[in-house]
Amino acid sequence: MKAWLGGIATICLVIGLAGCSQQEERADDLKTFDAAEEISADSGAQRAPGIVPTAAPGVAFNYRYGFRLPDANISAAQETHAAACEKLGLTRCRITGMTYQLDDRDRVDATLAISIDPLLARAFGRDAIAVIEKQDGRLRYAEITGEDQNPALDDAARRQGSANQRIAQLEAELARAKGENERVQLREQIRQLRAEIEQAQNQATQSEAMIRRTPMTFTY
Image (cartoon, rainbow, N blue to C red; front, side, top):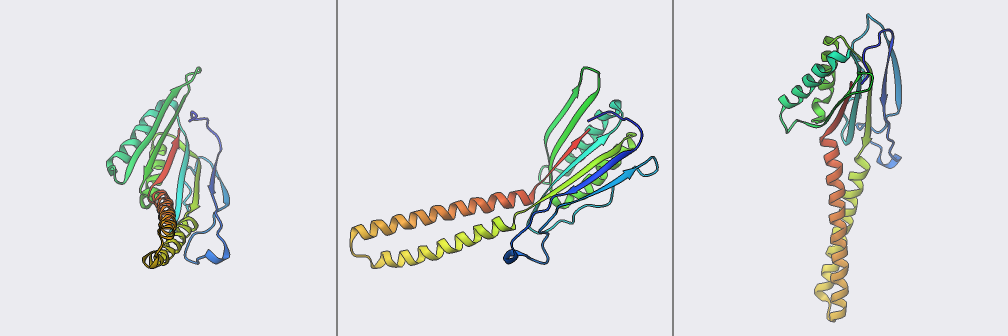
């Protein structure tokens, strides 16, 4: 992150928007984000904007914050943020990366990456900004993107249901089969369908994992 440079800062909140087909559209789901809002911050308006997307079923969010503060205060702010994550416990927050670098001109660049319970992300980000303000810094930008996992989950469920239905039909045919060649072919079809079910389950597991854990990155 860059050191404190005084003057007017611009805070840009970007929300990524993912669309779904009309057939899959649900009124109570967050289907699309693609809006940008810029807020000018002066010496009397350094607090974080209160605009964040509301958590939506099936949407995997990613939070990114950029901070500007004096080089001498970066380490303390970074350590405070890391300690706040550790205090929540590994089931709710994990530190996934941290950097601290001094360039040739003795300027500090640092980052902190965490994975947090999505229900805690909004409050954690707000508290993280408050820490920066106490260290004589301010928020430079906040970027919150969302990726809708509902289509992937629906597709996985459809594939599993269709494969299970077909397996039941093939097993009934297998029970009536008289020739060995026919039984071999039926068993191979069943094997392929079960492999497809496993792939669909893996797809659903990956989507669910993305929904359950929210990446959050701080750049100082």
